[in-house]
Amino acid sequence: MTNQSLPPALPQVSVPEAKSGDELPEEYREAVLCYASLCTTSPAKAAQLAYEAFTLGIEWRRQGVQLPWLPLLLMAVLEMADRWQMQGRGEPLSTELSIWLYERAAQQPIAPQQPPLALRALQQMPTADAELLWAVEVEGLHTKSDAGGRPWEETREWEVTRVREAFRECCQGVYAADVADSNEECRGYLGLLETATRSPEAWAPEDLQRHLAACARCSETAACLTLSDELPVVLATGVLGWGGREYLDRRRIAGERGPGGPTHQEDQRKIAGWRASLRRRPAWAVGAVMLLAVTAVVGVLSSAPSEPTSTSAARDISPFPSSSPDAAWPFDSLPLQAPMPVPSGVSPSPSVDSGVSPSPSATDSKAGTRSKAGSGSSLIVGRGSGRCLDNTGNGPIGTQQQIYDCGTGDPSQQYTYTAARELRIAGKCLGADGNGTADGTRVILWTCNGTPSQRWSFTTDGTITNDLSDKCLDVSNVRTANGSKVQLWECWGGSNQLWSRR
Image 1: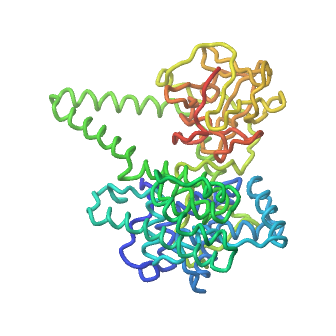
Image 2: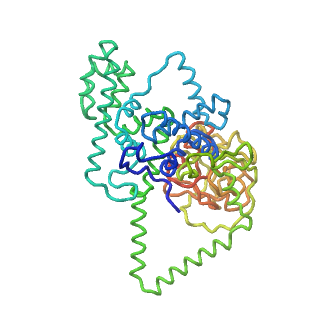
Image 3: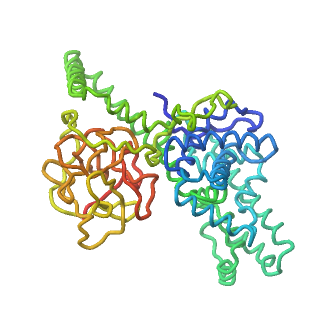
């Protein structure tokens, strides 16, 4: 299986010369889908939004828009989302994005705003330099190794330093042009602002600090001129406008798991050690290890349910539209030939409500693989949100669980972890809807039946895994607001999958 979490490769020539429409999806589809999934509530709609954004981005490029391909395509995602909303097609968009789009539309007639300084500076840079800056700072391309895991040459590290400084100079030039016709106060701080932001440790006089607190434009400029750890945030929020920080979090995790990333390198060290240990063992010992592995696989297969529930569930959560006329969209007419699967490490909300209740399924072959927690009623608090797992409105059977502000003694948040590794509340158990094992399966309240879909394991890293699927309890779309729904998703270490009991 190919790894689809790779950041874009280091550009070797200018983007207009190196890329054509039919080459774009292979290199950028995962990143574009990552952002599209933040903007929508289902994998199918995320794929459709990404598809339309690719088409729009290519049209922008043909019209001469000067930006690196990836920021251009991500901006096209947001533009297409805005068009959906204006055309009355905004129902699949996330609530947070819809509100943001409405507020932006309401403000524009009153006070039209200039594009962010970071975006205008990126447009001023040579395309290859801007592409490299975005790949390293936002997409997480590692400065010690490229996307293939090979060490970088020292000249490449020097190139990264050079393009960071080039971005700073472009920001300074754009700002100087902005204040040339403005009031004398902003012009008077031009040189002082450049000096005070040359390094994170530089000292800023009190009068400059007072001016920055009162002047939004100069404050934005100071953030762009300071080459610190906040540069990725400055770039992502300046270019995207909405969801920049969330996009950064997902891309950073994807980069760590891709070749060259620390997580991938650690996995490779473990694999190498395992292989070396086998080589040092006598032949009969290696044979015994392989025999045990085969026996374990046969045991798991023999205990699998006869009905292909996981396959059907995965089909329901497919990132591609169904074959119905109202959902179909013409891949054959698309100038970008590769399909766009949902990337690993992204957890959009499920698009299908199966309404199927959990039923007895496979015997539990995973018992004992996770650390167990003691019994007792407690709050289960999401580390990313600070909010508690909540039985929505003390709901009946079939209620999907959510997160909500933690309340003292609130019975809808008091979960009991039993000796059978069930999570009980109101005399019922938490389980995977329809014995589902696909990403996006709802976590619901159901009559306790002792099946693996209702067994949970608290791990030492803070995740809570479902025994049937071995997937994590996950807050949809990395959301933190009250009412955000809870589902199952492949464990990827995000803050929306980390929990603590108290």
